[in-house]
Image (cartoon, rainbow over the protein chains, first blue to last red):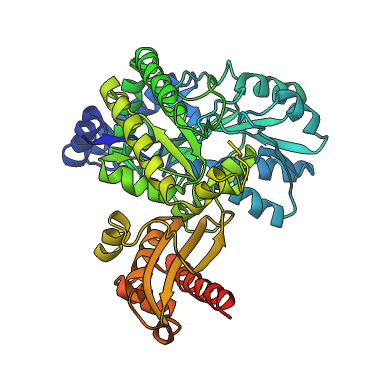
Length: 395
Length: 124
């Protein structure tokens, strides 16, 4: 059996996205800035894509800028807020401890440039507490940036409450919605979102393309200078095939969202129930407020990379927050942020399900993981110590 | 290119000398759970020769493969030879390890040296 259960890393492009992409590579390949017909056709298509994308998140088309992906949009959002803040002498930013590195590393840079950053705790359930955010807001706060849904543990943040608090205090609110767009309903007006980042390949679009929503009236800081594309805010000839495919994939995802999410959620819960039967394990992140596709567990006494390699032998693609999969000595900062100690954070497993997952596949995953965890524990010195009572169980 | 060489995958998927040795007279454990790797080596030494060896490892694919390869390299070998075992020899026997995984071969060397030390301490 072959099961791709790493959809939070990337997704397979949908048929409609591939077909759309091909059309704009092969036929309507003109430069949208050219005046002849195929150029102008590409331009029209681009504006249609912009309107389609805007409609999905309840935005105005002119407020969508296409980028190279989520990381670029995150960088641009932070630079935009920082520029506005600096002009007013407001150099304090609030974020969370478990953001994506596109946010955290940009915040590090801003700190070097004189900004002060407060990282909110995300607690054991992987959720920001709105009142803690409100308490952290200061006179000089220029931005709150909180991810919509976490990429590792899938927890969905109280975005509406956060948006209301930011609005009340007149602070800009950005959300990295890379894992959420196309999977959960988003309306930027209803949620008081000022800026939002998204990435095409997380919802069956292509890699290398994403978008940055920025509310009208916010002066955008450029990362790339050059031509007048994207209202002069993002220079470079538009990635028309990528953008068209992104829009096609997103439209399709949005159209089937309610039904898909219901279906996937039921399989997710079946998977969580099955894996919970394994002794000394724990689900990471809130059981309810999480993406329909996300399952993340820690297993005591084993290491994540060896688990992944053995799952791969069984045809299952998954990921882990173990240090060995990141090339550093520390396990995932997300798992540490929710209070998992190093010892168990190394034994984590993320399964992010596709929309076509079946009950049979879920059961196969449960059987495979159970078998492999038992095998790895059979020769783990940590497990021996736990079994012989020389160490105390954490989970 | 694959993450690991075929040899690493072979030793990871089919570890040699896996488990614990009830009558070991030299046991060494190195590493810690914080970093994600622990290796435990059990040696049965008679007449200054490693008659039997087994290992238990908590760690990634290359940690398990390094332990397995290290046990193969020292089984049946006289102690004076075992003392000379380096992490480089373990890594080379595995047809190389990715740079950031070299510490796994270091752990294998250290686990064996720790087991030897334990044996010497017990047999003074």
